[in-house]
Amino acid sequence: MQKGYSVTFFTQRNRTHEEIPLARWIIEEARKIGVGGATLFSGKEGFGHDGQFHSENYFDLEDQPLQVTIALTPAEYEALMARIEENRLRVFYTKSEVEFGFTAER
Image 1: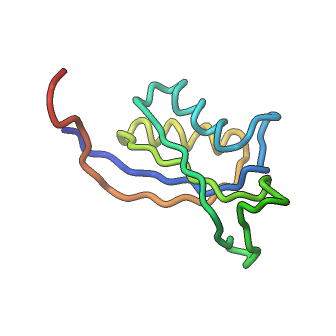
Image 2 (image 1 turned 120 degrees about the vertical axis):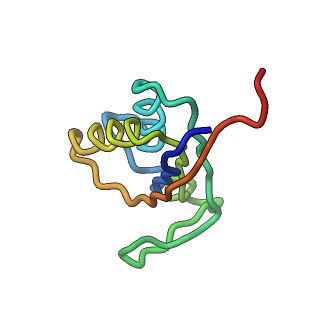
Image 3 (image 1 turned 180 degrees about the vertical axis):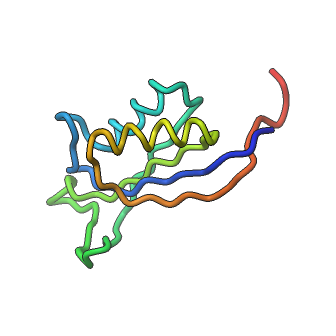
């Protein structure tokens, strides 16, 4: 068991960085620093800090809300946030202290 953080980033399908969807960029950066896994969730609808409504609909899939959730050690958290800061990205996130690990050995 390890102690660390559960971090969830909130974005939309149409947000990109370096011509890559932002959610994918976050996942790839997490992989580069050695994080063991990340999960991408798609949402049906929601609204952002600016009050703008975002939804998955037949006419506009680009505005679909997305969440990337990652369990991170403190060192992984610092490394990932440093990469986001270096790239001058503004992404809303939540961070909670958690314990994580596997239920059994392989």
